[in-house]
Length: 92
Image (cartoon, rainbow, N blue to C red; front, top):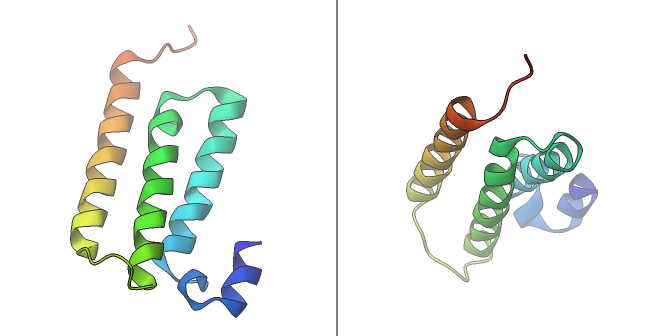
């Protein structure tokens, strides 16, 4: 569905950061709903917010450095995986 929208609306074209982040957010939300993994509960909203920021930036409604957004996404994702590795329950 995102790729169809991207054909007609340039900010969501196939290789855009916002489309990639929206797809990752959808995957994280689906994984969290099925498996309740801690990292998906953290990264899903993070990817969604970052996708919205890139979308607004692509529409020139918001001016923010892409390096800053990607740095926050990288740190948030790494933190989520570290939290899950440290605190999540594992099967015996």
